[in-house]
Length: 309
Image 1 (cartoon, helix red, strand yellow):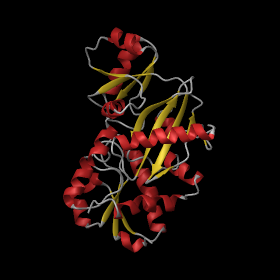
Image 2 (spheres, helix red, strand yellow):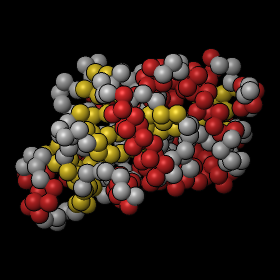
Image 3 (cartoon, one colour):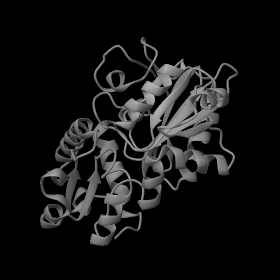
Image 4 (cartoon, one colour):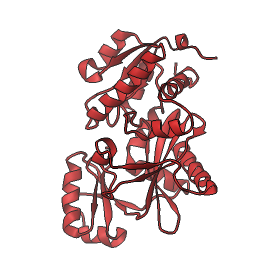
């Protein structure tokens, strides 16, 4: 039986310097509050204030990573914590690096036969007509290393494709185009060995962008998701395989589209998902009977057994 005293002193890392800083601040505040309510000796820390030197000075026994995007979710922080000998939540170095790189994630999935839409890397001098010929219209344009749908656009013309590329390139030097899957959007959260209930996301505006994720109250989250039991089991197993394929550990979330023929397509994986009041992992956990404070403690408890000491 794990006691809160087993955790020792915990530092919740949030904020950072990525484009997802504001979301991370909200996630971190929620996690910090949960651990305080649970009686954990916990302190919040923003790496933007003092970097690794400041974190080391706090002498934490373990770290809860509530950072999103580059510098927190991409393997760099994970590698630094391993060098410092500080256990941390979530996936390790390799899985974190793969998970934030949408292109490499897709290549791993393709290598093991998992379904994911075809994609192409884009360059400033790309043959835009060839991109359209290969992927069709509409298509999706994405920065390779951003989350929270930052810089993502759906385009239905050559002119829109060029504009979307330029917009995405403001966020990342590497930009990709992806075949558009028309259909229903699902997300599946994973907690240690448990596949949590799937959520079907419905956006009145049709696109689950940053505002729909974190600001709008119009986005609908269907729990139960509406799939037949065997379909939800199929979806859950697919997401488990997708998470395992990149070496994911502890907790995470996999986003999926279902086309008109009922086929599931893997879109991306999140190794440090949001924990805000709009976030999907807490919603799925609550539907499974796991309240927010318990969820946070279960995520943290994995640091006692994942071998990173």
